[in-house]
Length: 390
Image 1 (tube, rainbow, N blue to C red):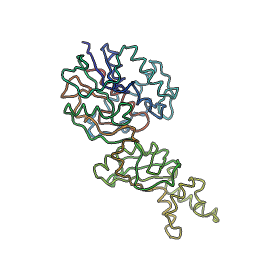
Image 2 (cartoon, rainbow, N blue to C red):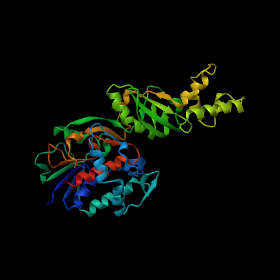
Image 3 (cartoon, rainbow, N blue to C red):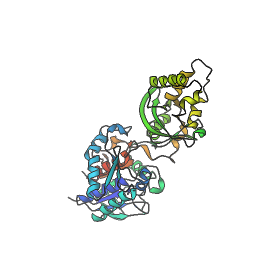
Image 4 (tube, rainbow, N blue to C red):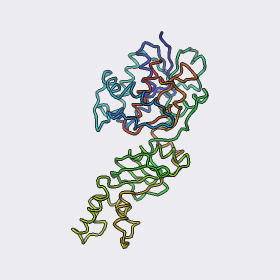
């Protein structure tokens, strides 16, 4: 029996849900409250749209309420399935370090292919239409629907339609929402890092919560006056923010020389001192660190002290940063959110347990992924799962 379906939200998950439902013959209407579908998709990966990743380990996803749903959803429509879907629809792709991009390096190409599929399947799209609540029976604009798929996005980039309105709809339905907080954002610090403005360096970061290491991340670090940016910092931000919000002790240890272990670094310093006795400490590292970073690392240290070399090694390998609680309320830099609809509220097919016929997908659920195509893969996997209408 065919099911007349309304999809609320035309982001990546909503469009995939609509295409999946329509592919099975169901008549589908998308209601989008901005003027065009897929506006947030256009921003993905700085416009290049890294839309999935070959390494789809569950370790790249974070949730406060998952009880096995995430892994099942990702397996039901995998990265290979996503690549095959877009390839069949005419999207040529390329890979870099496991990250999959459209061959054009343009997110507009991915959106164009999705729009073409929606047109082929005769999916009706109603833009500039805001929905505040879902009635029972499901009546929208005088039309009665058999199913509703909520795909209204999270609470970042409100101009793209991801303005938190989907959480309001879920709250009116009596659903349990895990507190929504920023994720994949820069890490604000109480320390002023203006002297490092413009510096880009390789680093390995470790996040500690109440003295226990909970996450590692490495890559290019981009300090700015108010804190730390770059993918390696952003990947730690979600867990750091939630812990800060709960009053935990949070700090980050930064290894500014991850390509040498501690003993190798000590041996390097010893060799430089022996081979180049005329050089000062800055001369030891002028071939490794940018001048601004070198000054930042060494200026607090006293070269007259007996433990100076140990202090140098410590500040390079275990430099401590303390995140500031102000980032808990700052969504302006965040790419997505942590928190959302608790998985305890949905079936394995992402239907609300207390409201049969209403499905939820994408950022509305209590899950977010690391940088690297994981959040778009979640959008496609969860959209496909919801769109099966089981």
